Image 1 (cartoon, rainbow, N blue to C red):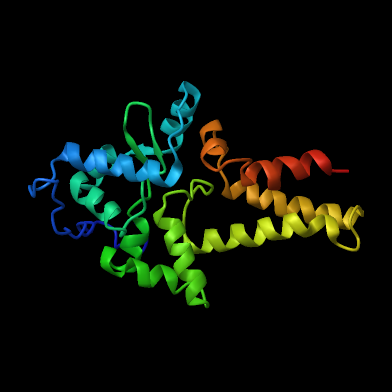
Image 2: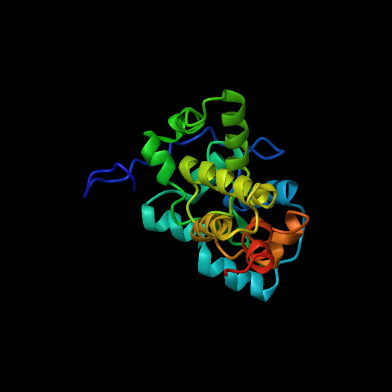
Length: 225
């Protein structure tokens, strides 16, 4: 984890007050998984995951319970943090119901000094507090599956690159050799930041991904000289 001395033990996830079910009893693991799945579908819609989607997600992400076992964290406590908007929702729900999360899910909280400090640490990376809050909400949605590693710096760089690539065709020297070199440098850098995506992403986002529009399309429209 970033900024954690070698050999030290990761700080535990802060326990949130227990969620309760309709009868007032503490939620079981099944209740929490169900509520998290329902919240995921509220954000992403209810779209099927194909075998190809499942294979992609299994290669790119880790099941929440497996990640918690690796880091010595309680999966239910993490689910509570997700439902309480302190950690991002899973990026995907695999067909078998597994909550799929990035391998570095806990890295930002560790770097911030704890889950309770994460929001302030995260939003401080933007000069405009309104933008910072909007990016925090986007982060919590779990939909930043467009980056190999979700950090404020990577989010900001992706935003810069996609904006520059989208505007490139309107530059005064568009079509020139120097322009082509600049464009492909931007596209190549974005390519290093983004994963491949899967068909499920185009369903939940309601259209093409940023890889489709800002990597594949420019390369097809403006091939290298």
